[in-house]
Length: 423
Image 1 (cartoon, rainbow, N blue to C red):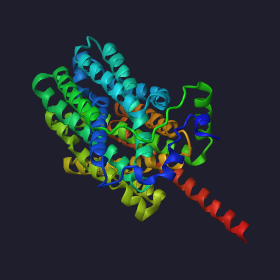
Image 2 (image 1 turned 90 degrees about the vertical axis):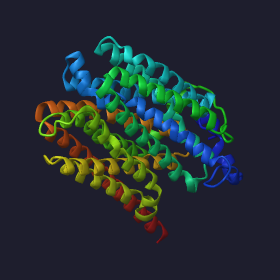
Image 3 (image 1 turned 180 degrees about the horizontal axis):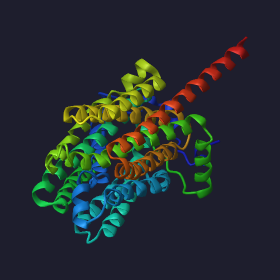
């Protein structure tokens, strides 16, 4: 089946005949490309989770509960989850760079409108639109990397993009936390929008033009067939579920942690709570190290390590000691970003056609997990306090481990069949 008939780029075949034309560390354009996508990741995560550290202030301003305020996060991630597959189809037709540029442009325009929301409903609607706009970045970024970067450097390159996500998530929360403490959450969101404008402009100036992209037509039947092909692949299904479950933990923890730290026994001010998100820097390191982890432990070994690290962090965070809570957040963040980088890069390597759709399905599952985690974590916190949120997270980690075990068993059966045939 030709690439055109599957909705995929013809890059794979072309890349195999001229592999040296793709980018590699130290080669022309690689550093510009890495920094550009790093900035795209910064802007995406900073905007996507811009209200998360401000939820206690939003609750107070609008007179709503934690679970109601959490919809400002869930609406954005839900909008992204819904639109990431359509955006991936647009990227096959109009190009990865074009779609990413348009997505960031619309998202930053909405970011400048968000501070003027007159009600919680208006804020949630704007956040949903913003999330839908941002869908073009994750839908296109990993496909761009799979086409333009040599296979041996792919995990590292995707790790750098994920690291940009972690820096965006961290810087957005720190900026909004301190600005909100002095001038309120509306000014904080406006300041973050201006930062995102700068990131979006620099991204467009720096990202090299694609050299291995081949335009495909927008045919719904072809798109549907490509999506069905990916969903029929057991390994891809497992990777999608793992991404969703990891993000369920992360979304729940970071949606609720602000409420926990502003309440007794910690009673921290908003600026200090925002600074707690500096632990995202740990995610930058762990995501960048994903390639080395896979090299040493294998993909499943790296996923086991990510899951166990996350679980250990959840259990530590139950303590009423601030240092132990912070250490727990460090472990949760490190485990999550490592697991996410491993799973997302495995999707790009596993898909043999329609890479944009394969990546989009992963991103859709991932952000469905974020929406579910944000909502479930807030509801569990309302019902049972922080222990309820931790319980939701531990169930999700158990799911990651269980799915990885199933993958190990499937691989063992496959090796056994190969040996039997050879005999």
